[in-house]
Each structure stands twice: as structure tokens, then as C-alpha cells.
Length: 109
Image (tube, rainbow, N blue to C red; front, side, top):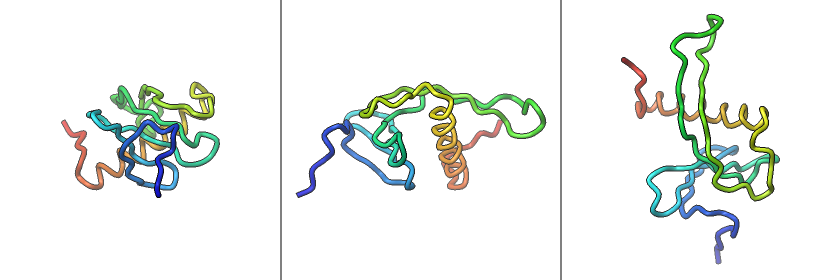
């Protein structure tokens, strides 16, 4: 018999990579990210505001700015550290890149 993890507040989970999965609580109109590996395993969060800078600061990559809300932090990890923010920032870049490749996102003018 399969039993859902008691500390998970999600009803549906779609695994997308070994690092994270999309998760959605029944009745919500947004998806969250559930971290699946490392010290952050079990953390569920959602991106709030996501924005790209108008132009690169040094001529290289365009900076990505975002805010996030933590839905579940079962192991009480430091979710305010630069390491955590960089980790979920990398996941956001991966998600945006994949959506662009699949034609699900368009950032044109």
C-alpha cells in the first residue's frame, strides 16, 4: 500500500529531474517545487515574483531576480542563505530554459 509522506502538503507531484519535482496541492491554482536531494530534501516552495533585468550589467548574462515563499521546511534548513537562493535560482533558470525550448514561454516584446 502506498502512503503519502506525512510531512508533504501536496496531493500531486510530477517528477521532472533528480533535484526537484513539481508539486501541487489540491485546490491551488499554482505549482510548487519540491526538492528531492541534498540537505534541502523535502523543502517545498513556490516562486513569487520573477523578473529579468533590462540589460546585462557586465555584458554577459542577464541577471534574474526572484522572490519565493516556503510552503514546507521539514528539516528547518536555512532558507535565507545565499547557497539556498543560488540553488533554487539555478532550478528556476532550468525551468525557464525548458519552457522556452518547449514553446510554453515567450519573453519577446
